[in-house]
Length: 88
Picture 1 (tube, rainbow, N blue to C red):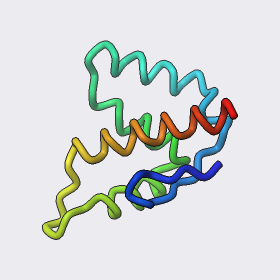
Picture 2 (picture 1 turned 90 degrees about the horizontal axis):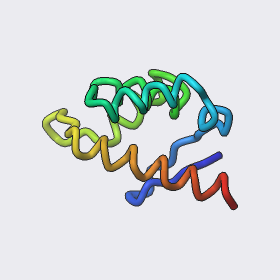
Picture 3 (picture 1 turned 45 degrees about the vertical axis):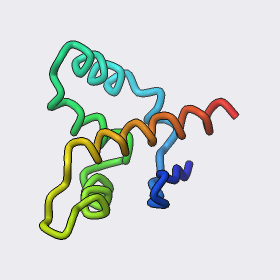
């Protein structure tokens, strides 16, 4: 399914990834305080490191910096949009 972020960038999410046990375990780890697992969550949701890199490149500023805040916003938008599409 195609998910469009508020800034217009599109990512493709496979529905099976939204029902992935490993993803749930990673999210649980994040909830327990291990924010570094966010990278693994994004890789699963986006279908791999290459797709994550495309998002990183999109979010990169003129100095080559990708803010954690921007990536967090993107993750939230992806999860919210994917949930809405899945439930429609």
